[in-house]
Image (cartoon, rainbow, N blue to C red):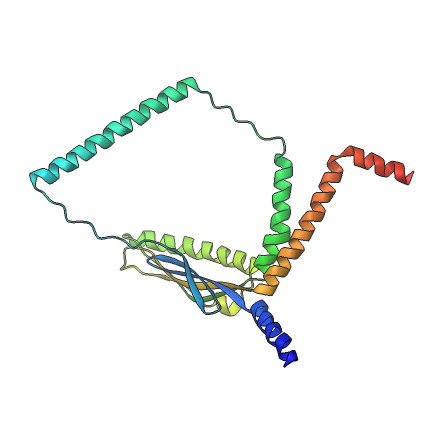
Length: 235
């Protein structure tokens, strides 16, 4: 019984660490982004569906209300333009780059190298559906667009393959078609990216340690007094 007290929590912790977190992207007329983990689905983002236009009333009161609203909106725009022109005349815009731009860019590059790129490389990317149907009003324009989209899609997949865990079987699921009868280009997409919890924690800890070590090196380079003290010690 005493072994079970330690065994059950250990099994639960291992299950949590090896569990994968999924972020799902669904695009079929509207975009949906969902987070799925431990049988829990959370909607992170959902684009609004296209609303049907309201039926307008053409009574005297309704027309007068619309006219008054439009007039008020025009007056507000005029006031804003006048205020903006006054501000431009009084204030002069002087932009100066901060002194530590190079240090900031260096820190950002380290952040992308040590944290984001390992996360991307250990993230699995899967497609359930990926179908792009190119269409337009003019058949000649449709053919040109098809060529442009197919070339850009090839480059996009090459970037994904270089940064994510993406197999050739998944790339074969990506399809691009040309429809000369339709008028609008449509995308039917259902894909998800997933990463295990333990790998994500490991990458974060390793990246944080590396960033901290770089920060210490950067500080010692910036402070010449510390370097002088070190030289005296060695002498």
